[in-house]
Length: 50
Image 1: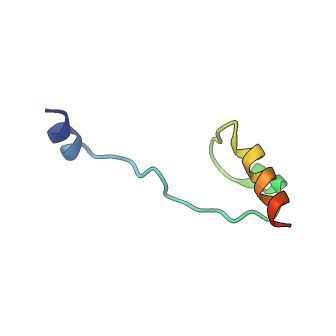
Image 2: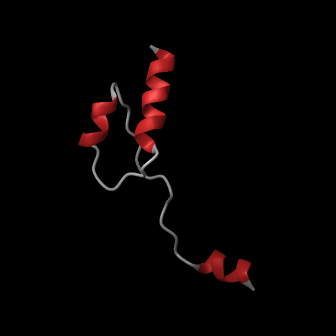
């Protein structure tokens, strides 16, 4: 049963940190790997809110 095995497995959290960005260049200072589509999303959000 998949549900039973998934419930007993130790899982890493999907979201364990949140960072607030003031500009797209702040992405370069974030530790760890990033998905390719993150920069365009940040760019679009910051343009819409400025």
